[in-house]
Image (cartoon, rainbow, N blue to C red; front, top):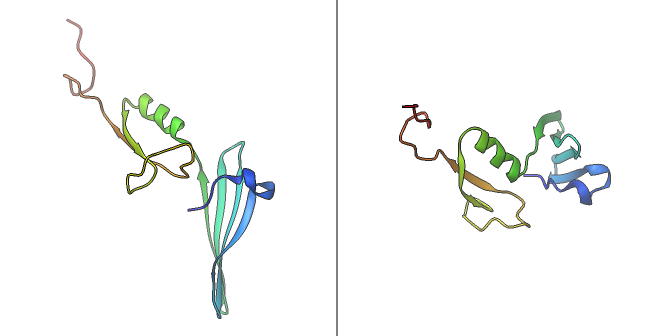
Length: 115
């Protein structure tokens, strides 16, 4: 997973050599726009047979934004970890695993009928 803290990189972009071999090279090329929160990433494979691009575009969101979307959907945060191994989520965590649940309600839709 790319390091999405682009504030430390010139012009919010980088090129990282993921693999260097005798007959091929793999590069991770990223550009992040902090205004739109869009991360454009391309895994580039350079081989003697040619070059292969595998681009993806992601809109990054932070946990408070996920929490708001969950609340709007009628969910609440049950737990959050800093990784799949259930390490604590802290201000320095680079990723998160958030588990949401639907609050228990006497009516399946979550609403009571007026009497």
